Each structure stands twice: as C-alpha cells, then as structure tokens.
Image (cartoon, rainbow, N blue to C red; front, side):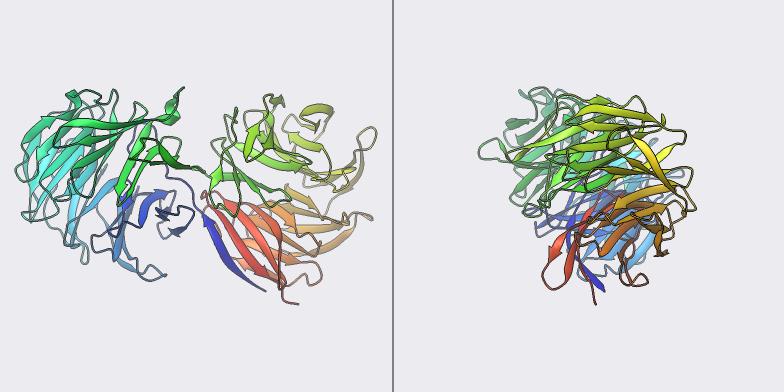
Length: 611
C-alpha cells in the first residue's frame, strides 16, 4: 500500500493583537511568505490555494524572508534561532543555522547582495544581531535600543545603511559595513511597528502605534515629511507598510480597520479600503504586502484581502484557519468542514482549494466536534453550544439559534442518512438533537469522551473515561444494551462502519479495537501501530478500510481483511492529527483521504490499497 499527497490547504498567517505581521515576498513576485506555528508557509500569490510548508523549526516560527537572489530563505523562531535554507531543491537543504540571541526574533532583513542578514527582536542580552549568512560571523553591532525591536530593513544599494524600529519609540540609523550605530530618530511617541526602505534606497518610512507615518532620506536618515498630517491619514496605529515596486507609492495597514495607498511625491492618500460596515477588532489590518501586480492586506482574524487598485474594491478574500484545527467532517458531496481552536468553522471544496466561512453567529470558543446529518452540519463548541450549519446555494450559514448544552461538549456525531445528531458532555450526559432541537437527554454515571451514531440511526456508541464503550438503543426510550470492555484507556474515538457490522474504538493508550456489532465480541485487535492518543477514526464507504489520526502526528490506514497490513503517513501534521476521513474512492483501487491537524493544515492524500 502506498500514498501520495495531492493537495495542501495552508493555514492563514498567525496573528496576535497589538503586534505587526511581517509578510515576505520572493524577488520574482510569484510567492509570499509567512509563519504559523512551527511552519513556514510559501504560498502562490496568483493562486493562493497552492502552498508548500517548511517544518524544520523546533520552536514557533515568527518571520521568514527570501534573499534578494531568490536562492535562500531565512526564517526565525521564538527561541532566537535563524535557519537559512535552500529554496531550489524540494528537500530545502539547510545552509546555516545560528542563534542570534536568547529570545524571540521579530523581523529579518537581507542586504541587496544576499550576503548579510540582520535579525531583531526581544533578546535577553541584545535586541539585534548582524551576521554573514554563510558563516554566521558578526558584521557589526545593532545597538542603541532599550526595548524590544519590532522591525528592521537594510538599504538596497551602496552605501549600506540599516534602520530599526523599537518599542522604545525610536528609529535607529546605522552605517555599514560593519553596521555601526549612527543616530536615533525620535519622532514617534509610541511603539515603532514597521520600518521599510524604498526599492531604490532613496527613502525609508517608519510607522508606529501612534498612527504616525514618517518619510526619511535613505542615505542620511533626515526627516522629510510627516505623512500622517495629510487629509485622509490613518486614525489608528499603523502596523505595516510596503512599497510599490517602482517606489512611487506606499501601502499601509492600520488598527483603524483600513488599508491605504499613498503617493509619496505628492505626499497624499490616493486610495482607502474599509473592511466592514460594522467593524470589530478582527477587522484590524496587521500586515500588508505589495508584490509585483498584487497588493494584499492581512486582518487580525487572519483573512488575506487582495486589493483591486483600479476599482478601489477587493479582488478576493482568502480565508481559512489561523489557529490549530480541532475537528474535521465530510459531507457526501465531498465538501470538507473544519473547526479550529478559536471557534472558526470553514468549508472546503476541492475544486476551489480555499475556504468559505459560514455567515451568521459563530462559536466563541474552540470547536470540539463536527458531524454531518441529513441536510445539516452540526458543530459543538467549548462555548457550551451546538450550532447547525445549512447550505444555501453557494453559501453556508449558521442557524440563528444555538442549542445550549449546559456543560462542555466532548464530542458530537450523526448519521448522514438521518436527521439525528448526538452530543455528549462532561455533565455527564448525552443529548439527542433533531432539526436543531433537543429531543431527549439522558444522565450518565461515567464521563463520556466520544460518541458515534450507527448508519441506520437506531443505535449509538459512547466511549467513556471508564475505558468502556457503552451501546445504547435509540428506538423508544434510550436504554443501554451492551458494554464493550476490551479497550485499556479512555475511549477517545468511536466509529461505525458504513455497513453497520463493525464498531472501531480508539483509546488514549494508542490502540484501536474493532468490535462486531451483532455479537459485541472483538473482531480485530491488531490495529496497534500508533504511539499516542487516538483522536479520529473514519471508515471507507465499502467498510473494508479505516483511517485513524493520533497525537503522535501520524495517520494510519487499516485493512479489515489483512489486519497487519497498514499504511503509515508519518508526521502528517505537526503537533498532532485532529481529524482523518475518507473523502471518496477514485479509479485504480485508490482512496482519497483528508486530514487536519493542530498545525492548521488540511491535506488531501491518494492511497493505493494493494491486494
């Protein structure tokens, strides 16, 4: 048996309130760069559904930058490590790794020769370091700041100059090489969030949390103008700026929920984009990038807006998850639904490759589970509610009413051929839902962890903290009719086969037991190749194979007929797999899988089942 990854749906950039996000672009103008978790994501600008990831950081990645030559990427993390790696080969061979200081790196800059790098951030011993990319030896001293440095840039030409912006409200100016402190520019009254040189090096700008935007001479560091005094300027802090390729215009993103384009020669605002008629904190714009023909802006919610400069509107908005995915489900039409730690639910169609976010009131806390019933998708959240999602044409919409569970839901399940959904809570109780309404409720004398509904809707299985699987009849009064006791840990995932003859139960001890639903006896006990808690189990439509995900980061594909034969997709998701489902069968004995994880990625795989 073998597998091939066929698609990667990338997470959005990680955002943090009050902090800028520095997006990077490649010299050819094809891709843009950002980080989420331990991953560096390289995403195509024209087709953002095309993405690749770099996963070699051992700590949370914070920023990434292409070298001007385009041959290397430098990426950094919260522990002060900078990795420089090859972009040409698929293996992304490491060129250099160095620890620039003990603390978080906030920004990086290459010089125009692709030889030198300056890294800045929140080090305990220093706030910046300049070094050669190939040997990591020092090429100067980034001194003069008393607090964390948020941004850095190097003049693209000779004489070399460098600029830094800091929480100490100053912009520092350095001569190089070697880089040496020249002077401090103290025009800002609050944090300096972003500093950037123009493509020619003639000018640079500084943007701050005070809403100020200053223009300086690139060689001497003298102030030319305060752009924030002109008509139409930002009314809130400015997080990010990016120059047009010709250096005539500047793009800026602000906490006032707008993005603007400035004419530098005329010193005026020429375009403004607003993101909502009823703006919220999520509409704050925390990053922007002008790369080739594309101008994009990033919101605090993680949404990437493509700005149409000719019409003043939006060309498109790319949405997705910026936090770890906690739940995954699939409808019969192969539409995927995912829920994440921040309460966002997304739907994905393979033909589009980017997410749609249901309109209406979402969950306000982590999505604990998703389930597909006849005509609806149900979601259970840590906000102690169950919500329904309906499809209206090309749109997905949250139902207006949220069903209160009265306690934290642990899991939710449904049968796609019936209208019944079942959720279990820590109360402990099981709640039966039909058409979005509670129709029954039963108290339990153990804490439930997982739940599954039989395909005919007449039976449910509840996995408990007591290491047992409890079988209930749903017809008439809900009564327990069997207890399955072969698991040795908390039963964290249960799933009925589509033909209804088998029940798979995975536990916290990494084992999966398959029970015969007629006799309630163990049918298979050989599915033991995970090494961590089982988080998800799903069956193929012919009931001959199952797929499971685990906290061990691996996905396993199992065979009923040959229990010891399995496909191991190692390291499918950093930080653990939260969902794995069969999407459908393809020609030639292949199956299509979808997996999701705490790394925020959704991935599609084709699996070949060798007979």
